[in-house]
Image (cartoon, rainbow, N blue to C red; front, side):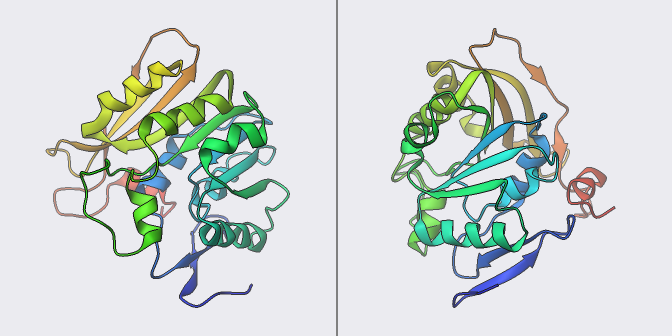
Length: 244
């Protein structure tokens, strides 16, 4: 597999999967892995991942069901190219299709209400509320300087079939903002799980699943604790990363 300057291949420690990342660009973190674990994949589903980055979420989700297919959307052409090469390297190009486009164009390009499910690990930094990142790639990936949370949720909703599911990971302190945006675009929060660094700490992330045109009813999962008091990873984190 051809690598460009600054790129490396990382082992995902799952069924032999590997991914290409740039040492000087945005690289996936624990949040993407947690979201992949939280997301359900049903038989023969077509799933879109908006803001896919280097393609980590569709790569991981592809291992949940062999009959699911994925449309991965990434606005940065060079990052989309990395994702595409990672897909080819793993022999998944018949199931994962990478598109270099703005997610706001995804429904028009792929079909309105054409997806059974959508996943999204959006930029966390609110416009005007975060420091400028070191590189343009990291800035676009982390901060809402080019797109708002309303535009992100609207793009997800436009792709979803009736009763289709959206799963997202987002900062816990912005939960109400996210839920308001979801409901504005006919997405009803149905499942939620908070993520805490340690049991005694407040949540810093949330994972949420919403359903298009569903009735209100919210299932709260037990919090996901990342670290034991001594700083070692919890058994659930080890399970999610397939270390045990």
